[in-house]
Image (cartoon, rainbow, N blue to C red; front, side):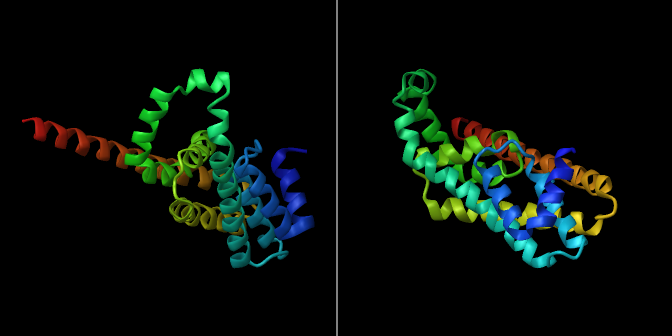
Length: 202
């Protein structure tokens, strides 16, 4: 059985609880694409086993719980890991100082945008905790990102429940557009910063 089939059967059998637990574990690094989980939860609604808005709420809470727990782990254990020989060589005091400066400048943007880049998401959230980012700030930024991605993915699973491959295709197109917009915003931000720096020097 493929991964999506396994998740679908799991969610159809155990409903909201299974969706919440899988998303929580995804936030902690379980190698399951979050998008498959969200679309699979929409399939449960399509099958009449759950309420659409309740499922959207459960997915958002599950995402927040996993991300927040990872951030808390970074706050609790991150400084200790930096004392380990391997981590100390990779992230020595000078490098961490530079990371801290960049995070102070762009941490707010990084936490929000990381939601749309699965490869760096966990690293950014753990680093946010390690560098002592305010928990309330982190939670609000993560909530904004989750509210933008989760309900749409759940709705696609519900809307195209009989054509899951189509739902995944539409979601992939949506992600490409969203990533393109994010990259354009980042490029614009960097360009504005360079322009202001040159203007001050001139």
